Image (cartoon, rainbow, N blue to C red):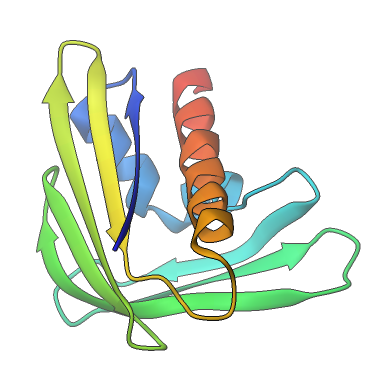
Length: 134
């Protein structure tokens, strides 16, 4: 598994809400400024599904990031299986500095692991910046 993490200077309730609400997801779930997430939906419950569309702003490419929740512990943890069968685990922990988010995921085989780690870390960094500015 590959792991990325960051600490967000905000309340646990706010971090959980911004992580899981589609209207917020559309504002942070992309790895670089030339991409965006024009669509997001989420049925936040075990067995519920989620999907977001990540797209290049110039329209040259897009893909759906989707899966099914296998564990939903409010303000504590999320686990899901992506459409391609890879597993993701996310833990939310309150600390003196804010909420630490630790996200671990099974790598795919098409891209180098460093590239995947960097992309997921960039998205997590976008999340931190978005939440702290709101």
